[in-house]
Image (tube, rainbow, N blue to C red; front, side, top):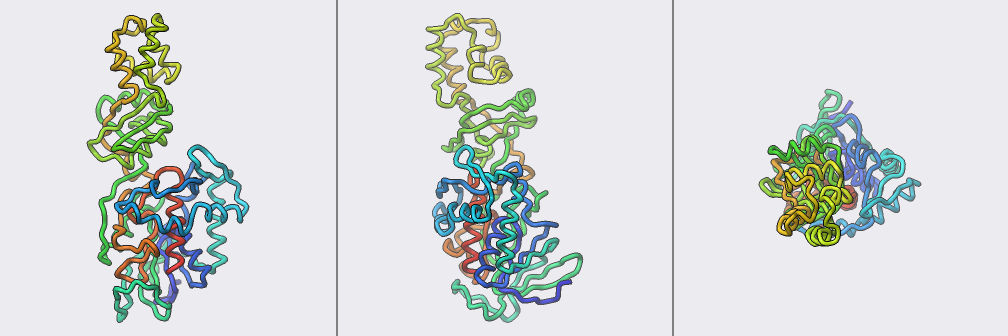
Length: 418
């Protein structure tokens, strides 16, 4: 049972990656730390990530791998706690891992290894973790006045009061520092919510528009029917939108398109934008087709393309781009027609009607405006002792372990000062 006004130095709201990293860091500094998690267990998103193997970081981490209205904001935290620091912790705990494409690092066995490591680190710092906790409100302790001095205080008295309910029983916690690590709106079944935004709004912080990121696209026109027929077919492409391009797999689904290249580009897409799909990355299709016409004029186009593309996809493209010429040889195609087909192979314009939304999105774009937060401490500028970390902030990583690295870096930074 929770007793009213229990005292802690630091209360972390959220038991995900950023919250646990912050908690273990503060705890190992000697701070009395309490983690409050609303779900029945901590680290749900860690456990499901990377197909259960957890893409916990990337060997190559740069500020350009992150989306933020202030592109310089993430630099300090990323340099304070790097991918090498986290890898060192993983190795210290004897966790086996492997490197995959694009320098991504995954657990060799299970994401549970990462969560167990974080729990052990929390235990070594004396961190208390409570689950099934519903946060009612966060406010200043009566009589304690905020100042504009963002210097961490000496811990002599409580500044914040957290009202909560656990197992149906109300309680309250008073603390010097509150760390908002509540996550965001993505995958609500794993605990995603907008509570962190409500807290930010309450304390006068700005909020930037939010939308689903790292998320599949959907279509409402004839393209959806094409995707339905191709559901399960995958191939390597380069997907581009708004001057951002990513090479990787595209997967056709019953609703539209997914796969790593599509998830990456979705974070740069806005409603109304078209997405360019290069079906033959690394090959200048028009020059290749015209050369094949000269040297292998008796070949049919479909079998030629099947050397590079899935048979089912070629059949669909044939119906779209050269209908009625199924039996024609390359020599029967005009240079103009082959040029047009080549251009479309390198720049197939698809216009999504929407994304699949937060239900399947891996991240939430936008969030708490970083203008009100110190990049060096993660502390709010006008409310000493109030910190924000992880996905709730307007910092979003690309696919490949970057969002976890932001969780580790921002969590560690806040834990150093909370």
